[in-house]
Image (tube, rainbow, N blue to C red; front, side, top):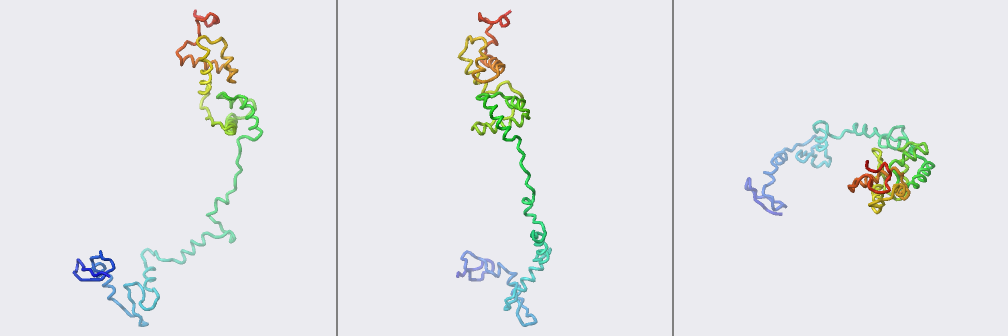
Length: 245
């Protein structure tokens, strides 16, 4: 214990905390005042209301009385507790347990866009279009097997996932060729310059497994990127319709 001097009243007091500089009488004047008011009940037991229970009885009547008399009726309410507890009744009593709503909902069977047989046909037809399938491959296959293009596109991505290939995005508009096809056409066409053979688009189409008209469009885009004319009009073997008039 430490003996300190109160900075308010100057009285010395004992404390366990050496940093405390205010005595209990100055720090808690209300407790000191209430402690002096002691009454005796009809049984002769002295009640100390400053501590909130009946001294010497061991029964915290004073504390219980004060707790139940809290404002706004915030004390323990047995009826309210039973009402809330009965709200969740067990299934054995015929009640509903609202915590198990999810388990009570019937499980809806998942509907697949395509079945296994359709997926097998899509896989067979799509693999024949590799390595550079056309952007409208799903439309071509859909027309051949009489299925919706979106369902075929879904099946194509399943096939690509099976082959460890990245998924493709559904085309927002129809494209003649994809960027990958464009790059492949350019790589095969550049070595044929400056005078590629007439009908080279057919040769490239066979090598890339693409439609001839798509390769023809790709060659035109490659020549435009390189700043070349659409045709080599000055070559001797050029057809008459390609020559300058």
